[in-house]
Amino acid sequence: MKVDDVRTEADRRASEAATHKAEVRADQLERIRLSQEKEAYERDRRSAHEARQAAVAERKLASSEQLAQARARKLASEPHKSSTRFSGATGGKPASSPDNAGGGKKKRKPSSGSDAG
Image 1 (cartoon, rainbow, N blue to C red):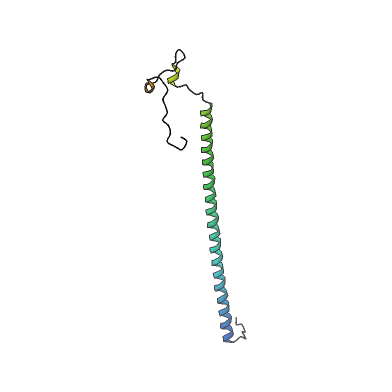
Image 2 (image 1 turned 135 degrees about the horizontal axis):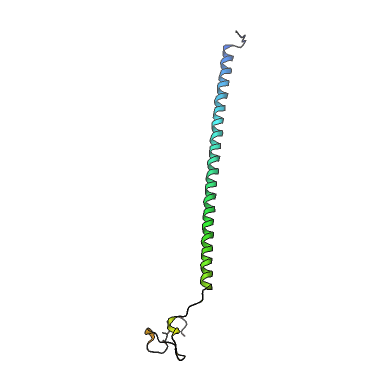
């Protein structure tokens, strides 16, 4: 089937060139769009990963804080055991320890700080 084309050869070439240029530009725009979508996907993926890591770290911190509080409560609720040095006292006198065999109180050395004066 033959089509009557009244355009000149130059018009046809110009039309084909414009069509080719439009196709190249459309391909370029499609590549740009796909690249931007990929970048957005990677950003979302990274931020989701960071959010998961932050949540895990927060849970670990809360767990360790609870553990520390439980230990503190346990230590606070335990009855304080008396030291062996004073448990065997007889006659109202404290038991003498090996490092305090002389009996009397230890004298403190005067401080050499600015309090003396």
